[in-house]
Image (cartoon, rainbow, N blue to C red; front, top):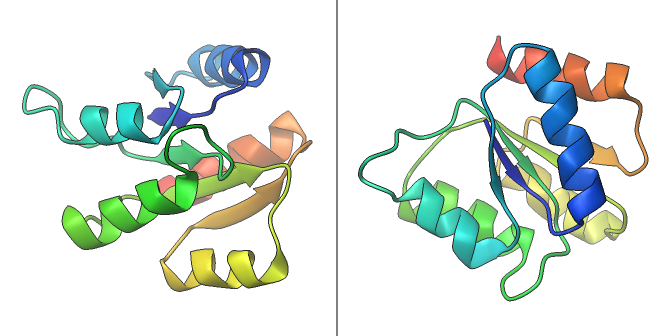
Length: 119
């Protein structure tokens, strides 16, 4: 699983939650780091990407477009963001996100969406 989140506290919380529930986790702090991990020839694509939209350097939408159009990947993506417009939400859904969650969200909801994305 790949967590793409620039907030260190949120990222640490997500990692702890997911590891505690049996998932292996990689982390990226910004778009270019995520894209590098997604194209690392020594790594396979993650089973799920948890993606923030507002990232430094290159945003989450760019990561999603890269994943879908450059890598032609259908890896499930769970968007977890604090602020996005309704138009942006529709754009993300058109790019095939599995779930769109607004921060803060409960651990139970997040885990449920991750499990649903993996099904």
